[in-house]
Length: 71
Image (cartoon, rainbow, N blue to C red; front, side):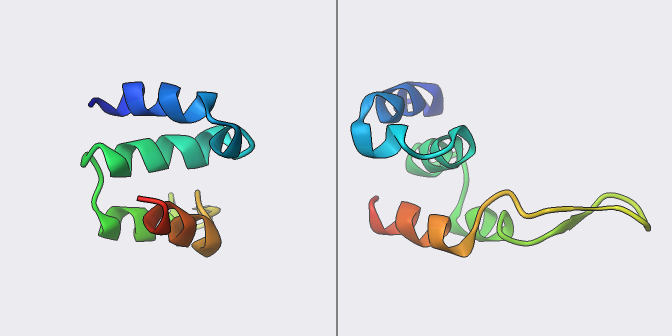
């Protein structure tokens, strides 16, 4: 299955529908094999964009643990 098909499927399930779009998208990419566990864990770290600006983490540690546990 492709990541977008998995995303649509997750969006229809009541448990996953309560999650944010970002969490569902990361989960679908991980379940489809597009992203690795390392990439998933890297999403929990702040990302520097420039010397003065850092983006907040995209996922929380709890969200990553839940995604991995539910696979």
